[in-house]
Length: 74
Image (tube, rainbow, N blue to C red; front, top):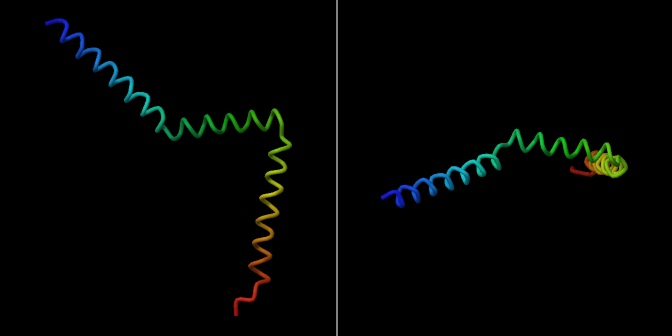
């Protein structure tokens, strides 16, 4: 009878581990802080791609604003 109890206990342990892993993956604040830490480390290591990306984003936004202002929507 202990064999069946051992299997049940093992199955419960596996299920608990799987549920903990799912909970960890779906923990948005934790994931956001991990992503934020990676971004800060990346910027500290090499800021050039970040500067280029920010400049490109600013140019796109300025272009969209100019297009919206200059377009003829009459």
